[in-house]
Amino acid sequence: MDPFTRKAIDIIRNIPSGKVTTYLIVAAAAGNHCGARQVARILYSSSEKYGLPWHRVVNHKRTISPRASMSHLRQRQLLEEEGVVLDHNGRIDFDRFLWLP
Image (cartoon, rainbow, N blue to C red; front, side, top):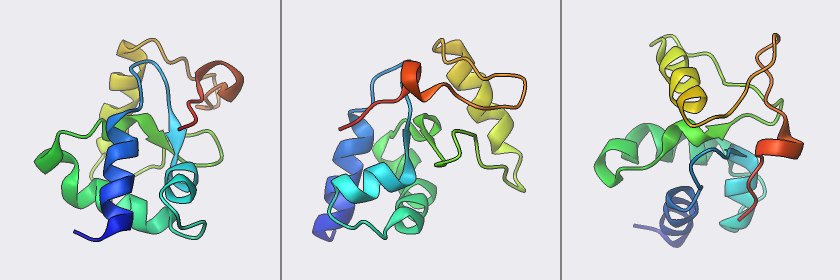
């Protein structure tokens, strides 16, 4: 496993329940300010294997990224179960719920 992937996985593992962060924040903290898509690929390929709280990573627009698989609906459900509130436009209040590594 390359160092960026290892660091990104460690960061994602540490996102507390009831908080969110973004793909870009994870990428930057792991050492690649342009690695947001790489973080998305890590989540897609490794969430189950490493038990990552994938649902706590959202896009920079403060929303859940829709997916063809409809897993975005499950993501919203998991976040709401942890107390994360999405407004009527599906946005998350980063002042209240953003976590920074």
